Amino acid sequence: MARYTESKCRICRREGTKVFLKGDRCYTDKCAYERRAYPPGEHGRARKKSSDYAIQLREKQKVRRMYGLLEGQFRKYFEMADSRKGATGENLLELLERRLDNVVYRLGFSNSRAQARQLVRHGHITVNGRRVNIPSFIVRVGDVVAVAEKSKKIILFQEAQEVLARRGAPGWVEVDGTEFKGAIKALPVRDDITFPINEQLIVELYSK
Image (cartoon, rainbow, N blue to C red):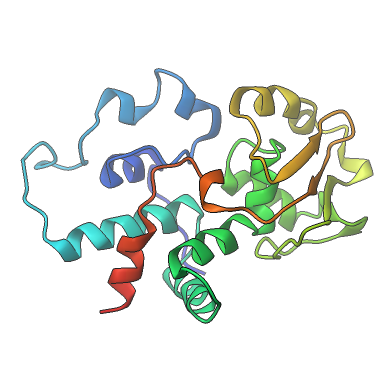
């Protein structure tokens, strides 16, 4: 599988906004985007007029990179969203938010989605009491996502409450920080996603 090996901070600068790929670093003055809020490269500071297609493409790339997906995976989620009733863009964001790796991140059990993906793959996370090592697993209302009993001693999870207090949890999950678990009490809706995303641009891009 293809894997991005360059500096993650370059992604934020390229997309023109923070996509929070470096965990705690993104909230400090060490953040590269805070210091150099312009695209990387020799001509990064040059003013460029973007076409409608370029704007749509950048929005898609921003969301894809934020959730850590390859192009084929992202396109599959769009097709799933398009086949469902309702607004395609909102359906897409709902599916992305319901991925297990994203839920682990939202519950505050990891500093980033990439870290959450690794925790899931290594068997540190359970869903309804059973280990699930598939990051793309889609949670449902009523599911309980928790840290495996033997993994609770890991320092990363011991610091989970501090991470959650700093970042906060969305309204569609209920977190029990002392027990290292969280329940899915509702499906995520558009208002739950505060990150600046214009999903309509993605719909327009894929509709060409």
